Length: 486
Image 1: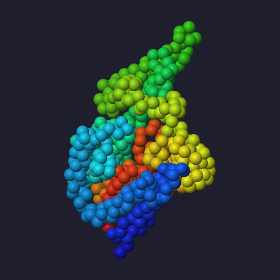
Image 2 (image 1 turned 45 degrees about the vertical axis):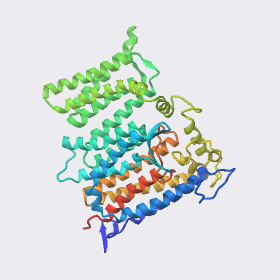
Image 3 (image 1 turned 90 degrees about the horizontal axis):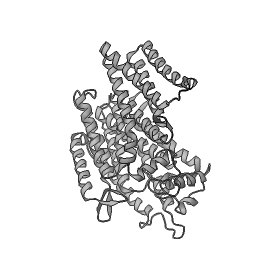
Image 4 (image 1 turned 135 degrees about the vertical axis):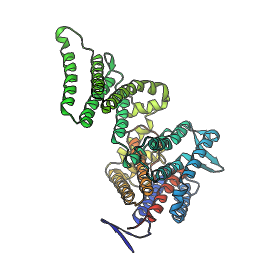
């Protein structure tokens, strides 16, 4: 029997073949690149030598294929029925790991059982997504209700806190990307905007903190100006009164024009103080109209303005007193504040050299000089993409990226065609996690984002990550296979 919806044709009860093909292709290409990245010129070994990284990855691949097969044989109803129990088991495992794990490379996130090392945080990804899907599938569930929103946020934040306590900040950030799922299921876009604004304030506050503009640094001045503009635009967007938007904007512009004209009267302009005055005027303007009209939107915009400024002023404390020195240095390097090519910037610097040396077509399989001479640390794990760039060039890298884009788009299409909320939410969770991993991993390899140590799905060496991604993906394929047909 053939199931058809729109342009999507699928045999009833069949696993999506395209996703399976992508999975097998990525795992195979990952294995070959792990072999290339760990290849030793002086002591060359074969692809199937189990004493090498490539040989060990082959074992992980075989076990992952068996795991995928077993996951497809489990009734899809099992995942929904036991979603909360699986989540609680994962939380318990994270707590146990925090107390019993040995410290490795500065983190306490690995459980060692004989010759096997497992990282529970990798498996927590699918557990969180299952729990979210189960909650959203509850009868008459509405995300806009405050208690439901706090429940969903709690499901995400509890493992985030536990993983941060294990000093695995990168994996904790992966969990936070699930906010994209919440947006698909009705989370107001304003919350996403607030998250974007917070990131912008942090970057501005840190990146341009050295140069002073009177009372504020250059970064704080730009951020405060942004807060004023954002608040004015919110007035226009939510109040729907153009005249109020123009009055606010022109009034603030007048304050800056008066400050610019001050030197004409032999008065030195303090641009930082000017920005604070403009911000204060905006705050008073919002409070006045809230008291006058009783419209709560004015109060919400005022709270956004006040919260934004408070967050901005806290960035310096968080950066200098909360973040560790190596985390500070990674951010400084990523923001081009320093060029520490022999220290924190060494990984990224060597990675850029390796990718750049590949040119258009690359140097060929096993012919990469930067990777073969071990200039790039972690080149078979977090920095595996630099091996692809050096040996296969821009063309090979572009092909891999194109395949990954098609893979993500296919996941989104499968998620959208689900007839149950459980399947749709889980599908979007899977797509969000893969998308975040791909963007951040490749971004840190080319120096676009700070190095936070997360693997490239199916390509980076490691049993925990390969198992984790396999479980995440094939649970979704099993759910998709069992979806109700029209």
